[in-house]
Image (cartoon, rainbow, N blue to C red; front, top):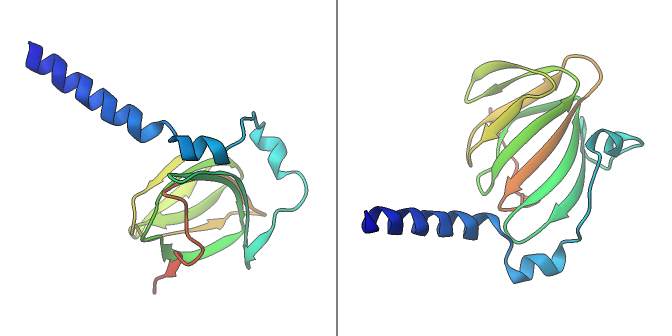
Length: 144
């Protein structure tokens, strides 16, 4: 039993260490509460045709951004895991070539290197995206 308790304590410690910010992270983060639907009022900076993004918070280990997409071609992020929550709108897409229908409440999990694309059904699809580590500006690799 002591070995099992030690294993659980070690695992919890590793998990806590991985999700809690380091001292350096807390110096770059500002506490706050965001009402996510309100964040899409007005325009977001366009990063490429069909994709608008605004970073809300960034730390050494992760970032969070709001994203508005009309269409983005198939691509991968080789340096970041991506977790995307659909806030509003509907769309179609594919993960690893498997077609998907997307709508509010869907959570998309994209490990590093996973090919994916999204196209809004009408207008735009609004997303909350978490990347770990933070998505580098040059880590969008379009696939054929």
